[in-house]
Length: 156
Image (tube, rainbow, N blue to C red):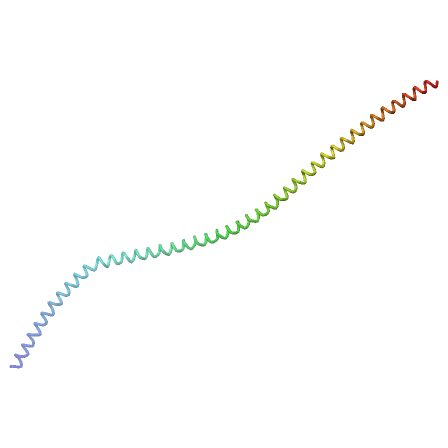
């Protein structure tokens, strides 16, 4: 009997412990439910933030691609600018050569005009001399003819 009493006491202790444990389990279940209800908005916010993070990451990737394209465009344009600058420098050099050539040509033209004017003056002087000589020759011929005619009449 003692054994039964002891076992009943033990069984009662186990039942008390079982009730306490059951109560604690109920309390923990309520806490768990409460904590889950508290964590649900946090979980929703976490999902929202994850979605937003993915969207922002996609935007960053897109912007990096656009930036890379823009950098490539700038690099290409800088190469074009360097090429065009070289062309401009070459053209300026050619312009300088052409301007120098034009100045030489203009100087030669001026010299040729002056030479032509001098030749024209010389031609005019020669023509004037020729006319003067012809006039003088004609005048002398006339005098000689008059003299010869006058002598011819005197002889007759």
